[in-house]
Image (cartoon, rainbow, N blue to C red):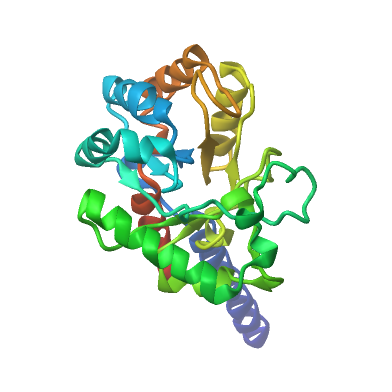
Length: 273
């Protein structure tokens, strides 16, 4: 009888231990200030509306965002002082290469000029372009460390995957898709291919619904915006501002910050787990 009781005690202890371990796993990752999730607002290609429309709008609601300018953009040349001021206001300037090379062999890439064809690049050529972009951006904001956004979310230069080489030039990297990817657990997110949804003529309700999905999953994601009220892949100024109003009203639930700050934090938490 004593033997049976001892066996039962061991079994009970084992179950309690496993329950405790499971509880630790489920607690997984916490976000700053008690937030349930995190999201980054990112803006691609260095468009004029980024410094003239988006910057002032973000300032109004006191949000910091990440801008990924293609450095051959005319706005970088014509409005350089405004881009410097954007960085001084606490926004991140990330690397999006000089010429925005994408794979011309992919569907829908007919707009690419021949010199932008990533299929014709060598890995060395691409990495030199990324390094030069880092140097240029450093002249704008004085920073040495930054993140990267894959142009067109394409990772192959001359048929070779360059994603594994990017960690020499960036602390993290963002992907992108016009289709909403499955919202992952934060512990499963690849720091060098963080998911991002690129809205295209979507309304405020669509943007807010995506944020709510991220909150519901206690996760982390990003928006890839392009034209706000102008230029390409447009989201209207009104819809963009409605999204900012929603984020402002839900600061206790979602942490809005730059991509660098969010991924630095995420990396530290993934290491713990």
